[in-house]
View 1 (cartoon, rainbow, N blue to C red):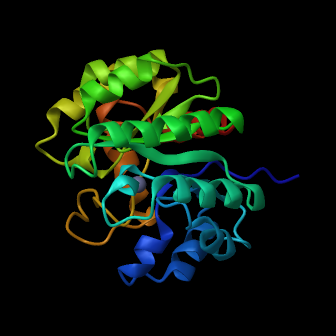
View 2: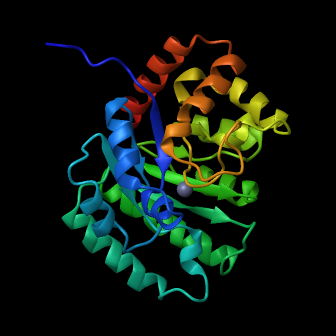
Length: 261
Ligand SMILES: [Zn+2]
């Protein structure tokens, strides 16, 4: 049997959001397939799973997650319990590899801190009931996220996605079994601290992502991001960690399968 060579993995992107920005999704998926790429299309709302699942029906190399981000508690949204109902019933109909993204965001300050924490915790419970890992968004909420992580265990682990927090939070998350995922900002010149954090994370707890369509890495900064820009993030991390590209590719593949299993 011919062995498929290891290839790049984008652990976090949003196909529907790319499409809204005018990206030809079919073309991106075709290119990803020809490069043997794998990855996860990430949910952001309780009701986006059916549409994403249909979009990816013939692309089994892309996994799906589903969850309601902290924006779910914003005042212009449906009541949270109603959103959770919709999420729970769509999870019965479609195959997902994780619950997320879920989390806390003080930058945009959706709803109240308390309501964000409740929504996040309810979905951590849901993940545990379904024996699934979590994918966590945390922005300018280090303290609240630290106490949330400390308050429980994560038997199926999880990912701190597009990590932009402190070293303390990163190491706490690692001690809870989490992967720390770095995105385009690690390539930005000003983010020296983020690169220091990356170096402090055990290699078997690192994942990489584009968070497309947002946060294009250098040298694509300022343009709409797609998973095809993943190579620039691998290159930046390969030189940061002084790790051959081949070894980094193999390590990310091992980490990604540890996350899925
Ligand atoms: Zn995201």
